[in-house]
Amino acid sequence: MIHRIHGGLIVDDYGMVTCRFERVLPYPAARVWRHLIDRRRLHEWLTSEPGGFIRRRAGSAVHLPTIGGAVIVGEVIDVEAERYLAISWETADWLGGIVEWDLTPQAEGSTLAFEHSDERMGSSQATRTLANWHMALDMFEESLAGRPRTWNWDAWQEYFLHYVRTVPHAEVQ
Image (cartoon, rainbow, N blue to C red):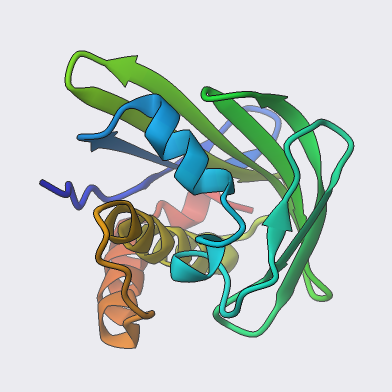
């Protein structure tokens, strides 16, 4: 069963804004990991076309042509096979901070904790970022289940409106 869990926003005392999601997945962490970094699968949930990649070692390049037309470029910051991946996230319009996936094995699957942190993220960017990652993580789960699908703008709009209503705008710079 796929869990549609809304994300949350964390703002620390130093102004770091973090969009956070946690998903319980009915798959072993090793399978989730393989799917996360498989360049043949990235277009099923994160990129708009084949050709994107996330290398498997720290210091390596990241190149992700996204569904919205932007190209994410960055670097692998840290990696621990089958458990943790952190990359820098940058587009032509946004120095987008750090994106992290953290996998924890569970008795019947795994938990995926996802965070996108950026000290420059304002409330408008945070609501879009939450909606974008919500949709991308839904698509990741569908792809893992063998049912890849395309971006659904109506669903994205619902997520966006949810986050507009729930993000603590006054606390985000």
